Length: 441
Image 1 (spheres, rainbow, N blue to C red):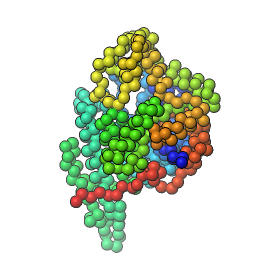
Image 2: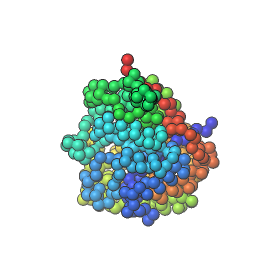
Image 3: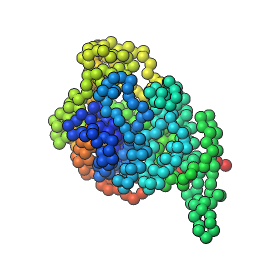
Image 4: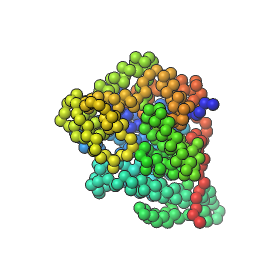
């Protein structure tokens, strides 16, 4: 039986998921902070009948290395503001915002997402992240990030507090009866009065319960703590792209954790990244991949590799071999698999920054014709390595335009994705039940 594939369209940077996607000849970096740029992105994804758009975010500007300022097109609009505007320019597609549980407060997030859910008629979603960079801490009164495990402990309490606030009111708590003068029924109100380790929040929320009950919750991250949090709280997880056997093992392991948490694993979606480079011919797709790889300046290559492996290579040529120092600890930023470091640990000869960068670029992309890209998507879903994908377009708007033009019809022809939207909310489209309101005894 063909499984229904769920797709999200991901905007990592305005210029695309590749760090210098903004340099592609079709890119328009002068429009990256305009509603027109994002309107095209959202409406293209909606034309492709994607389930949701998915906006990345970070509460910092990457200036740790000079190339982060000189070459890296990382400007971002605040996601909830942007999604509220895009709700007016779209009709069906989900609207997912990345929001940090480390540098926000539950009341703000609960209110903002409930507002987006009302304005969009049930299309809001939340990509929960705990943040990971010291640059973010320095924008919120600290010098260093919280310990990795403490971030996830705070994140879990944050989610529960937000849900308690969303449950402030029964769905029919506002009769607005002109004759009696009763606007709100007090018997249908619950004040959370949350008192936990990290948060004290009285409530209630000053907005009606969201149309979806709870906006859809995504969780990003592949670390053990991230998987545990997702298994207990999320509706879907945004995962990294892995070799097939490894992806199948990750899928099976996380689904088991969901079941162990007393939840239905079939109502929990695992959506890895997909970075497609698609062309009318294989040769055209390969040429585009090489163009994007070649667009990365040497300084950015060296500093990007330095950061990812935790070893300072600055001042070197991108083509100068280096000896890897395997004992560098980068675990407080991320405990997800570090494929670059792992490959260097198993290598039997020195590598150059350019080789490391090119290898990881190639491992992370799927290159080919529409049929070849669709084959990869179908294989991974049918062999239980994914329930769908978060499509990262390497350069915008070109890469998403080409995916919708070429790959979408192929997926629809195979019966893997729908040709039109069914009525309902984002939860309905993802096959998720609307959560019942929980009122503590």
